[in-house]
Image (cartoon, rainbow, N blue to C red; front, side, top):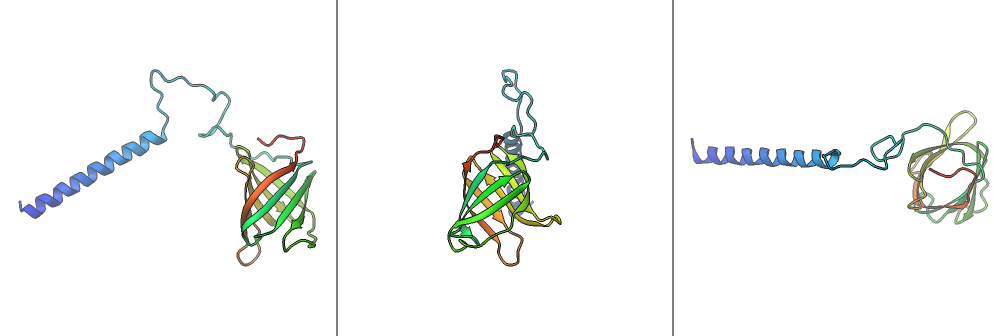
Amino acid sequence: MSGLRKRTITVLLIALGVLGLSAAAVYAATTKHQGPNHHRHGNAGRHGQHGFPPSVERFDLSGYKIQTKYTLGTNTDNTFEQTYTGDMVQGVPVEGPNVGVVFPAFHYVALPIARKTLYIAWVKDDGTIVDAFVMNFRTGTVFDYNPTPGHPESSGTTKILVKGANRIP
């Protein structure tokens, strides 16, 4: 066998070994090992890998008033207050270029998607989604997608101004 061929085979075997070790490390890091001294606790009644049960149960935001302040995207420099009642929401611009614009009230659907995080869609009577948000109340971050032409994405901060009767999971 020539020297070049031996070196090629050696490099190939080393590369395969590194790949195998990397795959084993990734597998070990992403699975939960239940060794003999491992005690399970805190997971009783929980579902899902990260302790948040998957659900499609709607969350009732009645009584909540939420503020969203945008620093990125289409809504940059705008601040809105969203008031939730029953299955309706009213968004009102309170700071920025959109102050004075009157938006209609919409129906809404809110779904818990992670701890202290809601996916909220504003919906017309005919079922058309007019705005969609992911609000993480633990980090105070909002991601907003308004499905209008152009680049309707926005992001910024969110906070609860008035709490409703239901605690955000």
